[in-house]
Length: 281
Image (cartoon, rainbow, N blue to C red; front, side, top):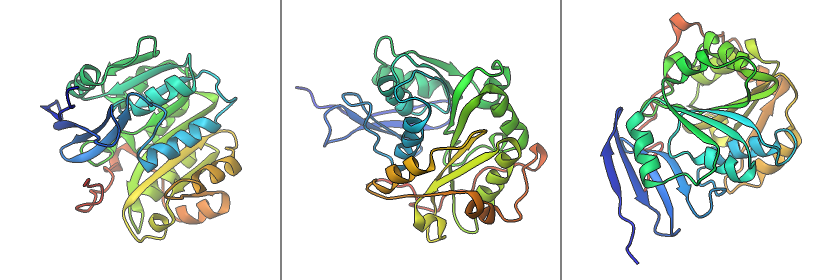
């Protein structure tokens, strides 16, 4: 049997590499310009390697009736980890993946092909532009995991963007975002303040060390118009290898503090991660 070999290609926005995992036969790590982006196990697409991906998966698992098919928009494609996950955990779901890097999409579907009948449609487009053209009330879930290099682009951080997300979601829908920041959390607090303008319910999921300001790291934002199952999320995230805390209500409002919603004209990208923050090896 031929051993899988790494694949490297210059795409529209960087150098993408697919590296096989020596411990799992058909599993691959995707990096872009050296930053880990996605991990996929083709034999077990329900396996989520990255901690933040597992937290997104927990929210998806607790949304609505278990196993019900969903209409999902993924802003940011990577190696299509969560679309593959939902295709097996929520069979029959209809999923749109919006990825600005056409070359990256082509590399991923060429090297890590989607199974037939997965119900996943791929759109090489800017995330906000695509969202602005999407029909109102057409999605149950929007998952935003968009990074230009290692930073969330500025035009995906503003109140105008949040309102577009709210328009596309159904009344009982949920918005999820993978964000990254460190103390004093100017970016993260501004994002919470921004989405609080559009959505009644906010939840933040992150490791305690990140929330205490001890290191740079990922945080998952959950926004909806209806209460989230905090108890179920807390149990699932506490059982992970790297347990996370689920913040909501008064504690989250205290965390937001005096932060203000972001206007388009004031929007900035998320902060640059410190060297080694998301390194591999």
